[in-house]
Structure formats: C-alpha cells, structure tokens
Length: 142
Image 1 (tube, one colour):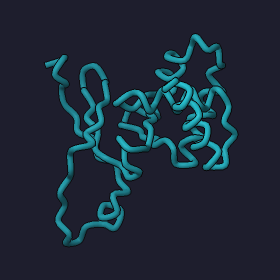
Image 2 (cartoon, one colour):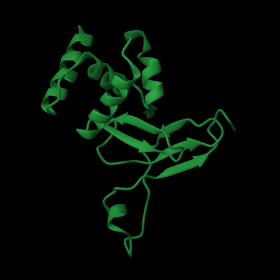
Image 3 (cartoon, one colour):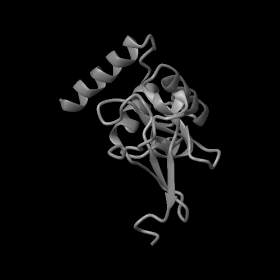
C-alpha cells in the first residue's frame, strides 16, 4: 500500500512540473530518491536494467528531470554527469561532495558548510551557485 501511495505522489509531482508521468520517469525519480549518493547515467541504467528500458530513454529522463528541477546534475571533474534527487534530503541549491581519489565514489556532504569571507566574494559563491568538491581517500580506501 505504501508503495502505491509513493508512486501516486511521484506521478503527481511530475505532473505538477508539467511532465507526463511515464513509468520510466517515475522509476528514475523513485530510484534517485531512495539513494544517498549521486548516480551516473550508467549507474541508474544498471539499477533499472530489469525493467528493460533502453539507456537512451533513461538518459533523456535524467536530463528532463534535471531541467524541471527535480534532479540536480553535477560533474565532479571526471566528465561524468551524476544526478541526485532534489527534495527533503537534498535542498535545491548545491552542496559539497566528497570524491575518493582511489575508487571514484562520490558522497554528498549535505551537512557540511563552506565558509567564505564576504569581502570580494563573487556573487555566484554568495548565492551558492558553485560546486565544491573535496577530494581524498574514502574510509574503504585508506
């Protein structure tokens, strides 16, 4: 029963953004809302492989969901777009990410803030329209 109400909630959210609530869009949004780390297109396609949607459809859904503000798209410097849901767990503005330099995992640092001096700080930084990536070894690779 809870699964059905979640599906209805996702469908309504898509429609509120002016999008058709297709099964593949609902599945993509549901998956990204259920994980804590940003996922690449390949990661999402692999996780939804059993549904037999083609990879191009999944990619178009990711881009479309990002364009309407339901997902955030970020590149952590490896030229791979990663997507994360925007919602109660992730605010609409960007937040720092930790990137492991050994295994490449990316983790959200939602509880981390970056302090900047207000003197001569570019407007983009004050508005939090920049991406901050911290690099190092994750706990598994240390």
